[in-house]
Amino acid sequence: MMSPVEFFRNLPKKVCPECGEGMQEQAESYLLECDRCLSKKEE
Ligand SMILES: [Zn+2]
Image (cartoon, rainbow, N blue to C red; front, top):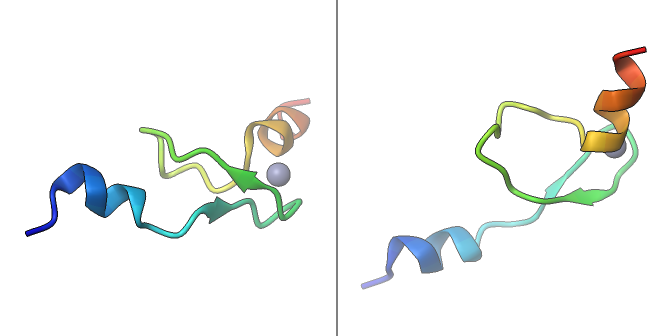
């Protein structure tokens, strides 16, 4: 049986739809864009 940790490690890497950069999986997974694009939008 697969452990939860292993399961999440096998998930495909999240990619920012804005710039196409791979981004780290974070607790705030509702965020679609990477940090760079998000900070750009805040201006
Ligand atoms: Zn981005």
